[in-house]
Length: 138
Image (cartoon, rainbow, N blue to C red; front, side, top):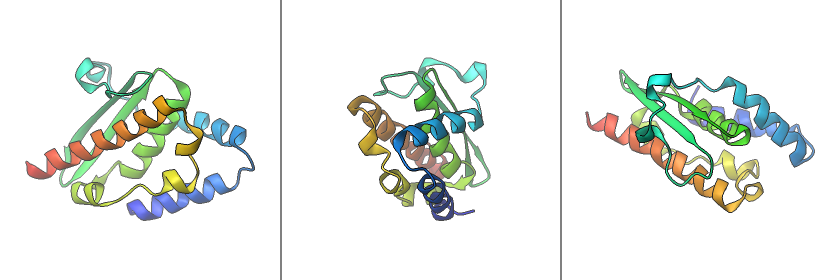
């Protein structure tokens, strides 16, 4: 699936819920699906700077695509990173760099996050795009 198709799928899923309590519950469910980072990659250099909670993000290049693994010590944040991984994992470097993640605004996620979680979300996206840029240059 393309990045756009996955984003539309996520928007449709979140449209099924009537309120943000249900959407938070769904984020918690999604946190169980994130490809977990290996213990050996759970190091300070893989911590996302700017997050209130601890978020580890690691990536590796497979052909011209990027594989992402992540984890967090906060369940909502883990659900958020699970969404980002779902959209960008296995995608081509150029596609990751070129696509805007419009689903975040479409589902109302950013407006329902605290300022520190919102800053952390931006930091996660930035780091994922940096990985793609570095791998593209290799």
